[in-house]
Image 1 (tube, rainbow, N blue to C red):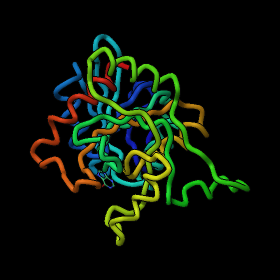
Image 2: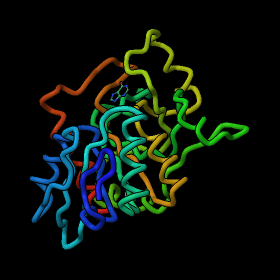
Image 3: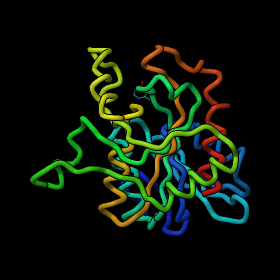
Length: 232
Ligand code: HPA
């Protein structure tokens, strides 16, 4: 069985999947954290793998960047491959001075400037929230490991290159911690299709101080979140 974007048989993909944006990061996780890993997807090079972590079957697959891309992959994973727990492991840009580079954010909920929710034809706006079950487990693991983390809302934006570099301040004034580009769609699809989802984000850009993690250091920073995501 294959969908337009995922070439796999039912059962090839575990109930739990880690979702980095970059398919090469999926390969990295597969090679460094999983045993007996088998690749299940190659369509568009959106690499997906299933292996074993501490005796448990777990998958990992790239999502690409943005609401449309993760919207497609998360929909197909839940609807056609019966995936039940989806954990995004990604990066974000911090909107708060006290949320520094390499800090971890658990995205409790997501706001958006995307039009994704228009498909539901609601007579209001939808607040996309994480699975409390996954959120609570992630927070407990982070506490045990003594990793610095924050829990709160993020903005899922369609725009990476904002024309007004101060526009983030309005979101920050409402307590939004950081910006990324996928979580809102992931949470919508999980809620709509009866799965659980959580985004674990590592701060790679600081919009207040204008610092950024160097490209070569990014891999190291991700290792922390992978550990947490795998342990959930
Ligand atoms: N903006 C949007 N998405 C991001 C950023 C950013 O600054 N950093 C990492 N993901």
